Length: 55
Image (cartoon, rainbow, N blue to C red; front, top):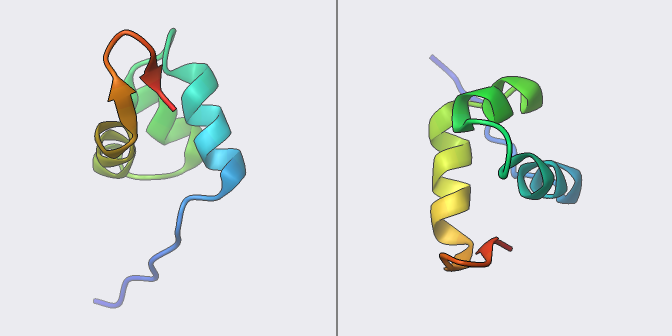
């Protein structure tokens, strides 16, 4: 199987930032057309402070 890797765009990251407060990771992934693991890793990598959330 051949997979085509695509980086998250600035628009994808903005959508994650806005949707994170009210949507699940699976719902965000479905909206973006990505795997839930991709969204989960992105949130884990870029969460600076648990209180402030994803940035």
